[in-house]
Image 1 (cartoon, helix red, strand yellow):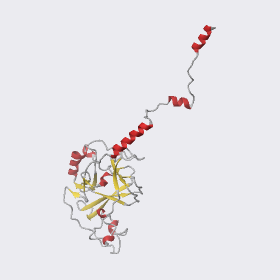
Image 2: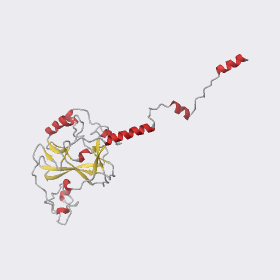
Image 3: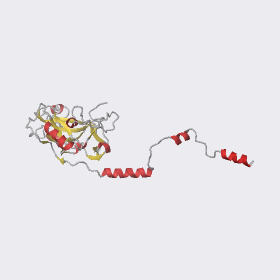
Length: 280
């Protein structure tokens, strides 16, 4: 009897049976390792503090565009036909042709609402660090659709000077602040070395802003006019939102100068192609 009892104890399985259904799935599921929440939260707090201490690359602030490759053109100033009691509203011929009125020559004087960008009240903005997107621009106040945000200022350079700057200054950093100023003349507006805070506005495949270029003197023919460029809201924007626009690099990209692969896009939009200048 004792031998039989010993044999029975030897064959007995003492472990509990495996769980079934959801319990079995939990036991066999493969998961990536995760730190406990208190530790991961502390690490996130440290990262946020480090990000808040990051400083954007330095540049020289300017109150108006600078002309590097040539002197500023003494183009003819277009004077509108608005009455002195008017405000240069949507009926203003200058506004209709995207021509900014000169503050000293407009018949409406101080009532003019088509005044040059540098004379307008800009939206309060600030520079903020956005991780993979780098530093960006966000608004500190609500913005209505179509509202003027701020002028984009920089140095007007010709194609050869642009190529030199891309190779000597911007290639190693990967930061480019170039936009087309006068395409027929082969001129660019460079906000990299000298400019204003609008230079920090990032690209997005689904932007909330748009760039507008208006004449200030002369005509839009080759080397016959000067322009001012500004950022406008393309939809209502809430305070705290990042301000973005489409860089439009499908026609031109600094990478065409360096010969490198296309610039990666990290905008995170649903329609993002992953590369600037490429559309889904």
